Image (cartoon, rainbow, N blue to C red; front, top):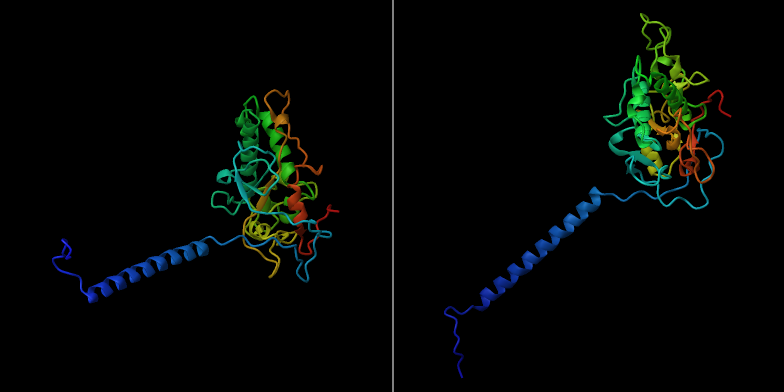
Length: 310
C-alpha cells in the first residue's frame, strides 16, 4: 500500500551524499577548533616547573652548606596576601596586595610601583611598611611619618629607626643579598664616593647598619622571584661596593626585599610605648628572617665576603 505521505521533491542519492559530507566537514572543523583552543590554553598557562634540589654552579661559593629538606616542599608558588588575610605570619612565599609593603611579605622593588630612586627609596619604604604595620595592629598609621610639632613625632622617629634596623640587620637576608657600602646607593650622600653630590655634605648614615652597609637600590640583582619559584637558591649578584659582579653572576633587576613579620600586639594602641618586636616561626626562628621554607632553599653569595657575617 502506498504511503499517504509523499515528498514533493524526493531527495536524490547524490543529495544525500552531499549532506553527509557537509556534516562530516562541520564536525571535523569544530573538533579541530576545540583542540586548537585547548592546546593554546596550555601554551598560555604553562605548568609550574618541578621543584628540584638546589644546584651550586661551578665557581660559586654558597654561605655555608646548602642542605635541601628531606622531603622537597610541595610548592614554592608565590601567593598574594592582604593585611586582612588569616594566617599571619604567613609561612609560604607571600607577595603583598598591590605591591604595598606589608609585614611578613616580600616586596618586589622591580614592580613599576615599587621602583624607588636611591635618593628616597629607603625612607619611602620604611614609612610605608611602618604605616601598614600600625594599621594592621589597630593603631594610627599616621604615626609612621609624624615629624615636627606632631605629638607623635618622637614615637614616629623611634619606630622608623627600629624598622630600618630590622631591614638592614647584619647577616639578615636583605643584607646578604643586597648589602653594600656605597652610601649614595643606600639613600644618603657621600660627596667623596661614586654617585655622590659634591655640593652637599656627608649625610644619612642612618641608612647603614653596624657594618656600614645599606641596601642597593639600583637594578643590579638576580631575579630571585623566578629562582625561588624554580626551587633554586637565592643569589647575590653585586660586590661589597655595590657594583655588579661579572657574567654569569650579574643581574639587572631591582631588589626582592623581605619585610619582617612584626609582633602586632607590641604595636597596638593599648601599649604605653609601641615598639618593633618579632614573632617566632614553628621551628623557633625569628620572623625577623623569612619563613623556614626559604631558609631550606639557601642563599648563594657568589663568593662575596661580608664583614660581620659568621
